[in-house]
Image (cartoon, rainbow, N blue to C red; front, side, top):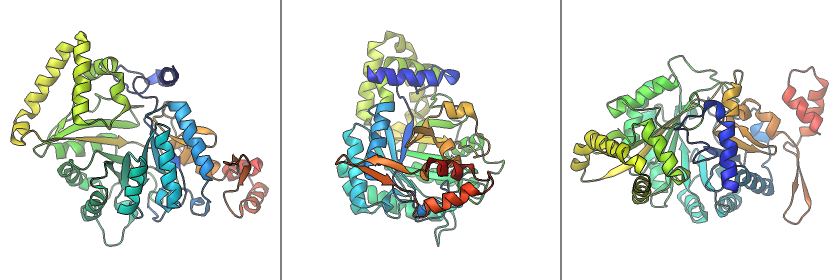
Length: 431
């Protein structure tokens, strides 16, 4: 009953943008949530979403991390994908990081490590995998200004190294790339790299440049958009892709494109929104676990088709179309097919938040006050990370968490100044 209520709550929240092929409210109550376990990072990206204060902020107590994971379970249910992130989460004490992943998995959540990879050693990944880590997402791109790597093609050496570190651990490997004017033309070549390693990579995410946080490059160039990034992916796929078949959240926020890679070619996994909508109705459990094996997916889809006669004719059309599109490649590859999902995230600039998009957000951050839209959180980060907390300890006592060593002195000074920094003033009032 709780799961049904969580889906109903999401369906109500998504009412303004609901369509029959909308995943949220049908199979999932949220796309994913982030739990930030540190604000510190060992890089300073040109498009960083952190604030100028982040590097000095103390890590929140592990009891507060557990409470936020509990809150994620209560709000969105078992099977929710949780990003263990920051900052870079590998900068937290490793014993605590492992404990956090274990706790999340014991709750029935799917924890993912979101990291730049510098501190994600093979030994650490082995510990995390044993604790229940489901995914590891590596952020690698030219905004990081890694010494000796001037292009996305150069950075493929690092990507290969990271793939080797994660190999054989049972983790879904994800790569995150921030798209900006200087790497936009490199995207087709980069996508071919992902295609050629589809046996090791499950999902690639392209995050469009946004003017938020402490990033120094500001808003994106006009040539960088959801539409143009779609086109760059299609260049690598040698043809058009049906982008609007699967909806996850607001259409202005995300594009979600599940594909099959066969014989070195990219094929859309499903090309009909009507068939996908029928599948959502026939087999809602499919959308709650993207870690299903190919065999498990085939069994689940087969069962859904067989038990719902209304899907038989659309299913026949779907499979005949798929066979027509990739039959020759399937034969030439001797049946070797790999799943590879493309995801485009269109984050908003801090000074131009769209309230409809915030209200129907599919990607939230768990804060002391509950889930908050990622775009809203990044636009007002200090309001959340500079807030002192009282946290219940494991022994039943109270931990008084103060984010900065000088927070009281600094906030008192801010309170005496004109209202130029409302974020700090609101935190001062909290004291």
